[in-house]
Structure formats: structure tokens, C-alpha cells
Amino acid sequence: MMKAFRIGVLAALLLPMACHAQDRRPVYHNYVKENYDKQEAYIPMRDGKKLYTAIYIPKDQGQSYPFLMERTPYSAGPYGDTLYKGGLGPNADLLHGKYIFVYQDVRGRYMSEGDFQEMTPGKEVKTTASDVDESSDTWDTIDWLLKNIRNNNGRVGIWGISYPGFYASASLPNAHPALKAVSPQAPVTDEFIGDDANHNGAFFLLDNFDFDNFFDIKRPVPVKNYGGNIFRVDISDAYKFFMDLGPLKNSNDTEYFNNKGKIWNEYLEHSTYDSYWQARNIRTHLKNIKPAVLVVGGWFDAEDMFGALRTYEAIEKQSPGNDNHIIMGPWTHGGWAGGMWQRFGPLDFGQNLNAYYHQLETKFFNHYLKDSAMDALPEATVFETGSNQWKTYDSWPPAQAKPLKFYLRAGGGLSAGAGGGKGMTGKPDEYVSDPANPVPYIDGVRGGRDNNYIVTDQRFAGRRPDVLSYQTDTLTQDINITGRLKADIFLSSTGTDADLVVKLIDVLPGNEPGITVTQETAGYQRLVRAEVFRCKFRNSYEKPEPLVPGKVAEVSFDMNEIAHVFKKGHRIMVQIQSSWFPLVDMNPQTFVNIPTCGKEDFKKATIRIYHDGAHPSGIVLPEVR
Image 1: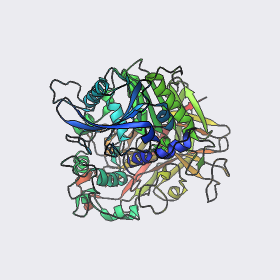
Image 2: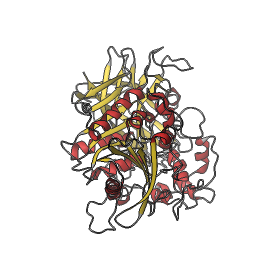
Image 3: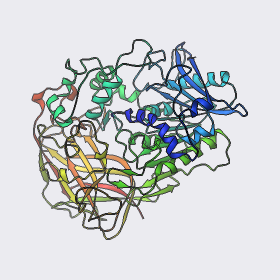
Image 4: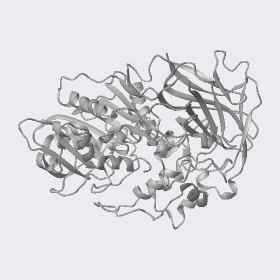
């Protein structure tokens, strides 16, 4: 992939296979065409622009049906009354259960009129017909469908994965009364703080370079096919390629974006959490939400795990009493859309997780759109890694999770302590972070992003002198960590900026059931969660501040949740480093505007990590007992 949705597109392409694998009833090649009539429409919006919409209506007119809609920037095609999709809806049970399925090209994409904006900013107040956003476009679409499509039951549901997940979220504010159920799945949510473009102000170079090359092509008029990328490039070794590329500004050289990427330039022009990013944070608009909501995400989603977790959180906080649910499983980006999900990387879950998930998804839409007798879903349904079992909770994170801080100790130790950092001693540990030799995000040579990096063995990193490792003694009992993590690290640098990468790792003792790898498994250091923070944003994302060389600074930030059991006989490890390349762009380690800085701004820096009584560095883990 890479940013938010080539994998989503892939999931859509895999849908016919999902129908075969997941549903008990047979699905054959012409099932959709033989059971649905297709109608194409250009639905007028309040400002006069028309949006291309494909509508699939069950041939059986013996009953009325609800609408189930996806709004997408990735093509609602195939285009033409006689050309049909191979599958419809998010899963095969819903396809067989009969809905009126609706696919729409969003404003400014493919065959829809208008101008496209990256994550269209929402407008709280609309006073004229020209005041439009994705909420109003969804409202106008629903209103037209109710009035013009026969045999509907007056109810509408919306789903979408990744960027279409954003459009699902954007339908929620001031929703049309007929919109009863919405499922934002891996939704792009806040691209500076935790989704796609940046994490805590650190730019995700590898994904966005690839994605914007594909997505950012100009479209002066509606088209059925964009016809290619902005530039041609064959990357067999991404680490070498981006090292050779040099400073980020070189991405606009003539052989690359050459200032032809509108979104790419917007990203580079807005290197702090300014009004551009704030306007595109959909979370602030998720107030007084009326439709039922099912948020879905993956523990191994390298793009929008943050979006799923924080969308659910925003609705909980800002819409008390909303019928809001969350499902989190051990999926990569959109992995739940296919028919089978039993393994990932070295992990074997011992079951087809997607079959179970599709039952829950079907239950959700049927319950709210068809008056089914099924009960509503639990508040939170999460898959617990390490133990390989589904868990349900009345709240998320679970109320019974209690914070337990594990402190970095001298000599590479890690331990929890009821007394906090009192009595901690030891000189700071240090390493030299060199922009000419950054820590790779994964072992070996890769052309594009390897999704497996999120669960792979971290021993390759631990052997480097610019990575620090801290681990517990062998655990004498299982430790269940379920909820949001928090890194709290005291550091100094000889430079004026730095990146801080914190990794939580499960260290295996030996041959572990459920782990099948070709190399020796003893001591396998399996990544459980990792996050990066750009230190100049430690006090404010809007107003960055330089590090003072040699002065200790506390860098404290939230990491995404986990639901994981560290088993008896294992160890818990924390690794700390200052580069994660080329997943994340290289911090020059000087306080400059990174998108415009030059090669001369990149400097080596000595990073010191403190762990004494005055500087109790550690990581807070939510323990469930």
C-alpha cells in the first residue's frame, strides 16, 4: 500500500473471494447480476454539483429493503448499466440477506462533479447552498434515494474501510433522520497526530510517497480511470532509495513529484498542527451523534489503528448515551473484509476470525436496519493476543484495567515498582543517532512497506549500538495488559531536535505454541506495539520548541491500545531508538523546518536516556487482574 487504502481497495477486490470463503451458501460468478438490477444516477447536491452513484436493487420486489451505502474516493465502478460488481456490501451474509446497495464517487473523484479536498473539512454551520461538506453530501444523497428508489423501507446504513471509513464518520454529524447505522472501519481520523500522514508530528515517508504518487493525480474533468501515477519509479530497496533521495524537499525534483502533487505539497507546507490539519480532524465534529455506530479496527493496522480507537473514544466522550460499539481484532488494514484470517506473520490464531466477525457485522446492520430479533452487540469486542481469544467488555478501555508503570533500570533492567521512581539510581544510558545510518524499521531488504514489521523479531535492532533495550526478569505469572499505553521518557540530546521511538516487545523463552518461524524461536522478540514522537512537539503540536542541548526533557505521550497476555516464562521488553527508517522520515536532529531543510542540517547527536529518582523513565501498562 501505502497510506490509507490501497489495501482497502485490495479488500474490495477480494470481496468475491470473501463471499466464497465466508458464507455457507454458494456464490457464483454472476450472482450479483442475476439477483440485482443496477441503476446509475447523478445525484444533485444542494450546490448543484452531481455525484455519480451506482445502485443495486434486489430483483425480488416482494418486500421493502434498507439501503447499505459506501461513499468512496477509490471508484464506485465499474461504470455502465451492464457492468456489475463481483460482490456487494461488506460481507456475503449481507449480500444474500438483500439490501439496496449503493456506491458513490465522492465529490471531485472519478465520475462525480466538484473539486476534491483531502479529508474535506466539516462545517458546523451551513447558511448557504454553497456551504457543503461530506455530511451535507451524504444527507442530500440519502434524501434523493428515499424519494427516487422504489421499494425502500426508509432506513439507511453506511460502512467504509480507511478513506471510505472517513466518509462513514463524516456522515454522522447532523445525520439524516433515515441514517440508522454507521460503521467506520479503520477510518482516517487525524492525520497529524496518529493516522497515515504523521504520527505525533513525525512524517510517515514510505507510505505517503507511494500513496500520493497514485492518488494525487490531477483530474480536471470527471474520469472513469486516472490512467497511472504522477511519476514512474522502481524501488527494490526502500532503505537505500530514500537514503539516496536525501532531504524531503528532494521529493519535488523533476523525476518525482515535481510540484504536481497537490496533497503532497499540502503535507510539506503544513509541518505543524496548524489550521490545515485541525480542520481535517473529524473527531471534533462527532458530537450529538444519533445513528448507532460500529467502529472496527485492527491491532496490526499500520495505517489507521489510531483512527478506529480514537473515533470510538470521541463519540463516547462527546455523545453520551450514543449506541456506540467497537470491535478490534488482530488484523492488518482492512484484513477483516476477506473471507479468511487465521494467520499473520509468525502468528497462528487457531481459527478463522473473519467468519466470527462477519456474523457480528451482519448482526449490527440487520438489527438497526431490518428490525431483526437479534440482540445488540456488546460495547467492546476485542481479540486478546497472546491468549488467542475474543473478549467482551462493558466499556473500552475496560474499567478494570489499572495503570502499572514499568521503570527503566540500570543495566538494561525493566520492572514495576509500587514506590514509583524512588530509589532509582544509575547513570544515563546513551547512544549516537546518526542520520547517515538510521535504524531500519525491519530487517532485510524491502521495496515497499512490509506489513509484517508490526509483529516481527526485534533482535536485529537490539544488536545495534543506537538502540537501547530494557527487559524484565522472567515472568512468574501471566500478565494481562489491556488498554492504552503511555510512554514517559526523560532524555537529553546534543542536538536541538530528536525523534523518540518506543517499542513494547514480548520476549519468548523458547518454542512457543502459535509461533511458526523458520529461524530459531528461542528468545524471539515479538513486537507488540511501537510509536514515534517528534520531540519538538513535546509541549505543543501547534508551537514546536527546540531541545536545549544537554538539558533533560520529559517526553510523555500516549500510545495506541493493546489487548495482550504476556505469558508466564516470557519477558517484557522496551526498546528505545531515535530513527525508524524509511517508515518515518529522518529527523535532521536540528531545530529546522524539515520539509525545506538541506543536507547540511542533518547532524549526528548523542541521545541520553535517564532513569534515576529525579527522572523515572518508563512505560505505563494497563493491567487487568
